[in-house]
Length: 362
Image (cartoon, rainbow, N blue to C red):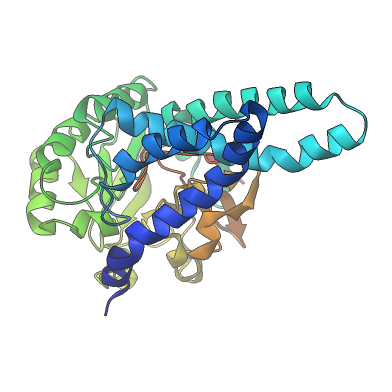
């Protein structure tokens, strides 16, 4: 039995238990504060319509007011749980109990709402590359990852991210996999939206595991028909003022379609390399082959994480490379937190992002 089949069978029960545990502290506190069981009844009425639609971690529920109400409430409950210990310590130190709990509840509601409705942040990073030709000094690469176009991420939203990147007048723009959630319903939509990406030296993409939750070959054809170059175990040479940059991409690791050797086979000697690899676990292999910069996604930064501490996130269950910039020797890895989400469209401590990586001479 595959992991996906196992999770799909047990996921509704696991999700129900998880949200019950998350809601328990705030619901008990509200029941005690109001001296009625009404908060528990409200929590059940908010949660049940969403939970009954869940089938697996890979399926998304349709957008509706009840969906966002449930997700916002659960996010607020989670924040309240995280604030419980500081609140108890503050009360023990002499702070007024009622005011402290009211402040914790207010912060939970504000942060919980932002966790559902957050807009991708633009993150700018600089990577210093040894031997980078002067013509490529200051070369700017845009990265969009984990779009997950689907019920929670419609075509118009993807188009808005494309528009933001286009407005930056980039040298190169990349899309590092998981462009859809699953199925064929949004293949045409995301292909149209991403086909609008523009940069001086073109737009390139690699495939992620979710991109094979449909007919992958048809998906690739649609992306390329709309102008996006999909790099599946191959690379291309980009020239700027006589200097060459090798842009390569590997296929999906989860279905064992990746072949890093083939992707780098046509690399010109001495040309700095940018590798698109949805799965960051390929970074050690890329480093061993002298790849200067690897751009990845896949992790979403965990979607739920402790802000500012990238080790403390759900992504640690799948990889050591959870989010942000890493360096080993002369090789760099940037793990994009992605713009979309898998499953519930909630992020806490791992905000969605668009990235711009600037190459500089070491």
